[in-house]
Image: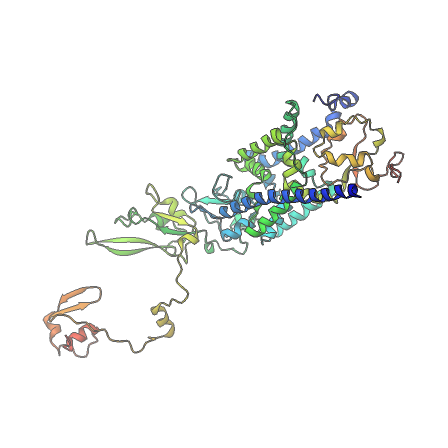
Length: 298
Length: 288
């Protein structure tokens, strides 16, 4: 904290009020907890809106949803799903092509609640430094899990996957999955900032591949208003995604096209200058705002 | 020139070093994960898969651990493996002694499965093979001890086909019958009702996964009596007449043992045309 000149987001709160300065964060928590509750009211109260878990779920007896990464591991190990499984995977891929691949991470995944808490605590405790690892590690792990799945003929990552362990654990009985989640929490708290979600998790890595082509994006129509307060960098779980669009590196358009942006919207919240907003990947040139033409002369 | 070259070479070296480090680190993780995943495909003997489950090695690849089968089981007897259980995490199983499969005719667990992990081609629950009942302990089985417990036989959903009671002489008392429960693999679905119902402290009859419970004859083995029936007669015709060589005045009958020949039978011309067993014919022929 001491390294920062001011409290992150303080300006935005002063400018817009606390609620507006936390709008997307609150909505995101509502989404994460709401989705979890939808799964939980079945076993808790016998209200079966959704059956299953994030691997595959069946909503109201009409809507199948299948995790595409899981299904890919099953495919490489030589297994094909039934009709509902296939429809489910098509719907999920289509949905995340619209809203952004890693939107799954920040709006749905229950582990995000754990790692966000770890990061909040890390900031609160003023913990600095820690291990360094390339953010590309997750793609290596993603590739490795597919190879191991193919060789062993199993869905390899399911042996360790904290995402499904936590989600399934909350719904079907946690067992020792809490220990795995605790390890992830402690890793993010003490070992590496944004360690799990930002560096290691192959589930997120897979969704980011969908995110390469997705529609919904964070746009920066007012990027020239940026006063370099750095608050957006401080809150962003994937800091590398902001710079090109914000600083027009190599003439980048004012839209975050990086596949690892999780569309969490925290940058929109904390910006007192309202540089960011949600939009589509197209028409990055907003009428009347700079950024239409490459701001960096070639 | 020299200065311009140096950083290029060192950055390439750096690239290879980084790549090697990444590949080795993740590779190490991968080997561990692979070994762990392989080990987890060995299903513990007490855990049985739902009806229609693929063989274990394929099952752990096909099952996406969603728990839909668990949800749609009207008897809530299926569980999902927790991380500490010695099988693939998140896969469904049941323990017969705790709660056996109730063998629903419409098999809702299979219908709920979004993958091929539970074989959707299975529509007749009596054709399912979740495991095979084995009477593992003849020392504690009450029927083996001479009681008419018969519970496993009575609770069996495929009664008189999967388990039959085969009468045997009670050698201990000499004049009672033992009703021995015999499991027939062509009819046993492995539902586990017998194991659940077995009244002994620890079940004397248990359901094991098929790979543990079922033996298999070598491919070249032929059962003589089956072949004979198929051929409609002896394959080594003519059947050799069996010769017994008994002490004088004694006879041997199959299943009865030695006995003294009654005087009437000894008379060679007493019943000359009646069909008599070969042993007696031999006696009559005076071939002792």
